[in-house]
Length: 129
Length: 102
Image 1 (cartoon, rainbow over the protein chains, first blue to last red):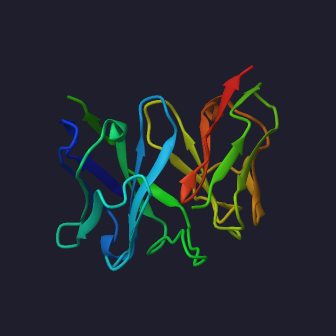
Image 2: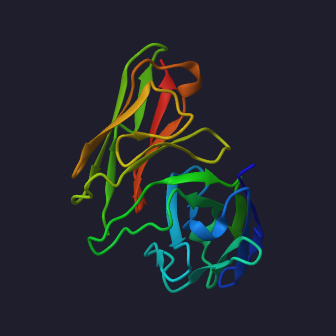
């Protein structure tokens, strides 16, 4: 069945780094865009990043731009989120999600978004000294 | 960045009620809006995409409408399984609307 499984969460000190992984199965991974979305304890959802089906286009929330990097490895159907210079406010459950189409675009009036139809169970990141 | 504003933040309703949640975008996004349902401790679930298209498997009591900057999610007859938090999304998520039992 269609499934996303995140891993790599844990406790890290402020200023540290962590890499999250999301293993996809049950669908043609190379045809769809992939996103990361996070949720701080007791708070709402925050979209973090998106990568297009072919890996050529990425976009980030302003809160993580320059610190986080999204990437994919189509040889093992995995999407990654490299998180550097972590801050306390990055503490959250991180979800990966599959786009319904090959990409999403939220900027520059070139809008394109069909929603995220498959989600993982989430992995928890805690940034604390 | 485009900001998404949802209202109300909390809604108390009874089983069988018609419920409407509003989402406003800070500038026109045509129909590029999605709605999600989230229950405590669970991942979000896509309900509506392209403002009014019902995701496969989602009950027909859910509907979406709107375009440009004003959007609504309507639950025609609230069921016990519908008590949850709902989010609109385009780039940024709305703040969420918690639907509680009255």
